Length: 314
Image 1: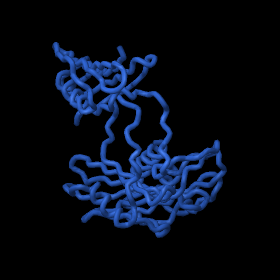
Image 2: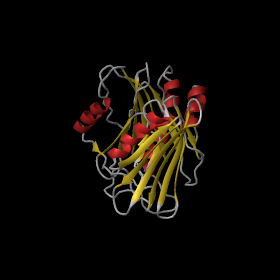
Image 3: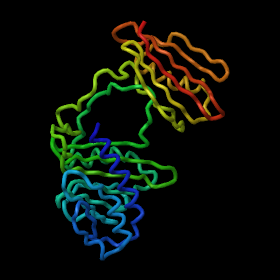
Image 4: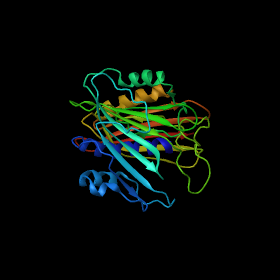
């Protein structure tokens, strides 16, 4: 999970700047941190600033970090696999180096509106190039109300060790499909020692015991924005998750949507009801022990909703 979070953060930070510099001529300008000399000071000032902002802050490992920007193209080295759907436009790429060695690469691609099954395209084309889907780690032990990822994400491997490849696909309204590709060439350094289980490792990421393992993950319906989701446990016999939501949907409509997800997770509805701004349902939870659940929705404003789901052992 740690690796995925790092990948997504790097993609978001990098892509925004690359899009802004699409009008600049490709250069080999770059900036460096940790004492390295930057040749970009004699080049375009905006490109230099972008490179400096994209480079990591000073880190305690004593290494040098550089970012090279390549508007409208990929770096000449290292060579990477980057299939593009018909009519796609390569906005540009950013290459990160650690101690002069390629550490990661990000690329931004615009795909024409209406292109179907972009994720399937990358599954097929990268498969032809020797990439395979990352191992399925199975469900996590955390549940309750969760923010939905605003797009489609894929992770690919050529073995347990890097490189690791990820493709994230976003479909904004009335705009080209936004594809962000990221390749990690090296394993992250662990300053305190120890080993790192990457997304392609046969060893699953270590999960903490416990957690909200009685609550399934509940995603909001399309158009509903979740706010401030929180989860917690009270001893070993009670788990709960609370969140706010911004939507015009009624409490009854929201209860019905989340109830479908609970039923799909194996919960059995015992009773339900609605009274004005409030909707609720009670449930029998499958598995060991005598666990029961409660789903409660309250309209706290014209477009504000309070959400609670709870699991409790009798």
